[in-house]
Length: 64
Ligand SMILES: [Cu+2]
Image (cartoon, rainbow, N blue to C red; front, side):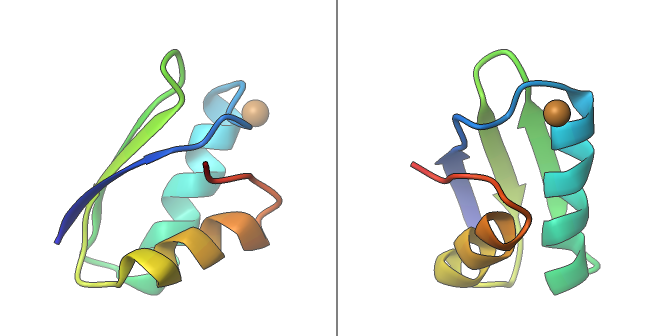
């Protein structure tokens, strides 16, 4: 399913890479788009929103 998450802890492209990896580790077919300026993560994945939130949090980021 498609989801949009606000991740205020994103500050640079490195964060974007970390988050992209966190989601593709859950679902290798996931499409992930991270907007560093707006700190928004858009993803299209078969993983649940709670699993995605947990994966991002596990990398040290904060999901709003
Ligand atoms: Cu960063």
